[in-house]
Amino acid sequence: MSASSAAAPAAPAASAAPAAVAPVRTAGGAILLDGKAVAARVRAQVAAQAAAFSARYGRKPGLAVVQVGNDPASSVYVRNKRRASLEAGIESFAHDLPADTAPAQILALIGRLNADERVDGILVQLPLPVATDTNSVMDSVDPAKDVDGFHPLNTGLLAQKRPRLRPCTPWGVIRLAQEYGIALTGRTATVVGASNIVGRPMAQELLLARATVTVCHTGTRDLRAEVERAEVLVAAVGRAGFIPGEWIRPGAAVFDVGINRTAAGNLVGDVVFDTAAARAGWITPVPGGLGPMTIAMLLANTVEAAQRRKGLV
Ligand code: NAD
Image 1 (tube, rainbow, N blue to C red):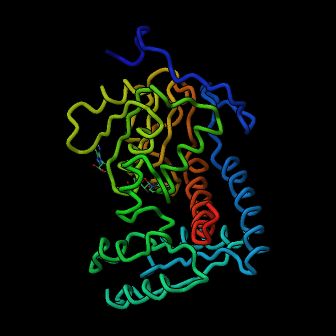
Image 2: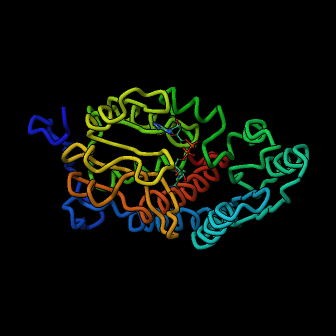
């Protein structure tokens, strides 16, 4: 059945909670999910919490950002994260290591950061150089300081319905939905992409929110049919224009996590925006959607880690 069929069931209803950010409609008619505006609200809340923490303990919450090598995209992300930390009143500890750093040295650095009282959060920018075993590095981060939410303990807790530090991009999707009053309970949700850092934790977050969740990946037989059923769609594949707008269910909430650079140098998502916005009820832009939300949730996780380490939450 085509998504354009009149038989398509109702789209997600808005909850009773008022939308905190004034809704703006795209030319296509969908409400634009303004990640920049919501991220600014989250960052302001984090700054207030960070200031209260500093006043009480005489030091700012601390975030160590570790980058190995100088992948240009990673360097941009790391710079943005460090700048956003400082603006929110979070101390930023920079650790830039050469690409050929021995794995034992990376593990030794993580060990020192785990033991450093000033450090509440540790972020290891991915991807790591191919010669480095990413799992062993991520597993070595103290779960109490794992502000990316990638440690098996934190992903396991999320899967067991008792989330602690939650992966930033999926957590950002949930926060964005909450801010716009998009109800998730009972909705048919499809996640396209099944990576450890986005797709899988996204599915767990949607399940926690009591949506009925389907996860698509390279083994999925009929992707179009799965997308067409989705009242809530999260795209996290990493291929420009991978999901045509014609596949979007009328009224759906579309969260486009993909960040892809075109030959012309522009950033675009995984969903074809203009045609999707003509059918969706809500849609995130790229850039300006989950990118800023991801950084904001990282800052929120850092303050939460600091508070948890002091037994405050
Ligand atoms: P990944 O490459 O690890 O995973 C991609 C997933 O897509 C895989 O699970 C794969 O099975 C699936 N996939 C690939 N081809 C497919 C196909 N033909 N049909 C169905 N599924 C298919 O990527 P990732 O790290 O999860 O990132 C995905 C995208 O999200 C990238 O563009 C990345 O840059 C972006 N991203 C954005 C943010 C943000 O802050 N907004 C954060 C993380 C990742």
